[in-house]
Length: 109
Image (tube, rainbow, N blue to C red; front, side):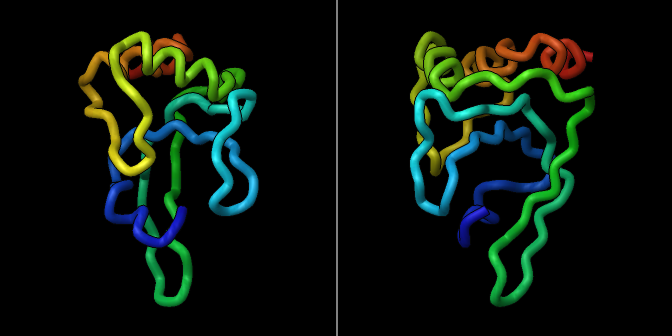
């Protein structure tokens, strides 16, 4: 995580990790995106970047592309803003979960 992300990413949140490479690099359309994971804990220590410990409640399904995530978000009427999370109960969050049906089935239980 980057400094300041600990103000947005909190324990219990659901996150989708997107491979972007070096710090400050933007996601590309073919960047891999991983199934939603739950934030188990956010660790902050002086003089270090914050770290989020993630838990997947299922075996890791195949990644999707960032383009697929972006298209799902747009189809649900949203847009990606890296500084503002989606409400977990929104149609946009459901559209993203639907990219990985296994994670969505477990989420509904």
